[in-house]
Length: 456
Ligand code: F0G
Image 1 (cartoon, rainbow, N blue to C red):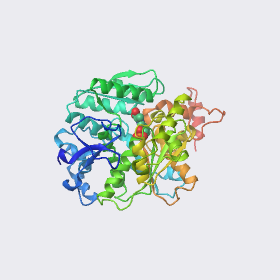
Image 2 (cartoon, rainbow, N blue to C red; image 1 turned 135 degrees about the vertical axis):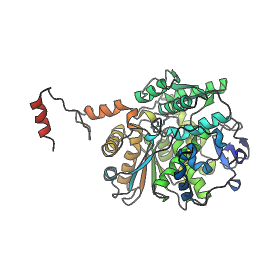
Image 3 (cartoon, rainbow, N blue to C red; image 1 turned 45 degrees about the vertical axis):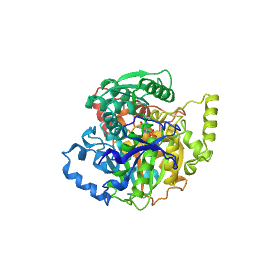
Image 4 (cartoon, rainbow, N blue to C red; image 1 turned 90 degrees about the vertical axis):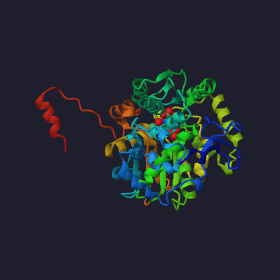
């Protein structure tokens, strides 16, 4: 593995300019387009079969083989091994979820949940942050920053605290940041700037600040981050004994995951490591549905690398004129200007993708079903299950299809949302569909026994 075989280039298929991996870029300097990390695969010793990665299970004392990201390092070979920054990320679980299969409406045994909340900081972000922190290490960055709805900041703060390699500034909005997430950034010692605005505002500001002060930016416009996030798909395949599922369903916010998943499958197919590609479903919250509107209603497509940029800018102009702000209880995906839009279009194109929107009520019901049958997840993650259910109802997903829903964040990230759901009636006055309220009982043995006797 050497760094010369990896380089950065624009995502446009006809782009001829490339940049070294020693450069710190978040957009193509010439065109402003998003960047990819590309590899000269002919010069890289890639395994003949994905099954070969299983050999690393027996050498888990090597931190790189322990990591659920770096044990696939031949598929993201941009870093010298000695510079890799890992904190044991990617020990996640693919659960065959019977209860959720019933809820979604697919056959028993066909619904899987990929629990990325089991990562060290409690979200999928660690898959990407280990790669960004590694690149920050490679270029000798001393100060890193990100804007965040909470999980990116928690993840970046952990990598800085554990590695001690750099200091961290995180920009968060003033609206809905879940307390679990904010508490992490504070506890891990990140300098936390609470911007009077939302995530879209915070991201705009942090990009300008990083540009002006030479700070290393760790949002998903950083192409190295998405290299790490590809490995979520490798672990899903591993969990399925290297069989490709019919569907990957993922919540869509800034569209980093969906973009990374598409790249993972493009490369695996190119390398002959898979023979078919799953379909991709990206699920927006109805209150933050830019991708849904552009893709499903306006018909925006990747179009061989020439998406209709006019359509996109007109859409954003209208959004600004109407002062439309993202609004959803799934605060992690409360984003109206997804920075990876074009990359996601490419992923949707390659994976014959669909986009759907689901309401907050649907998200919270789906989240409760996940919690009742397993380890639970935060609201944004529930969008993937709610989306799978909708696609099944619409007949897009068949009952016999094998479906993997990505649970992006841990249940404890947003306890307020969970407790509110279980204890509060809905606006209409009825209890929420799967609420589980605590039972108030007098401090009296007989009264307690009265309640216990009613439990069947
Ligand atoms: N799920 C969770 C739990 C998230 O935290 C995020 C994004 C997403 C889904 C959306 O993923 O951007 O790849 O489409 N959270 C970011 C943050 C924005 O700042 O933590 P995406």
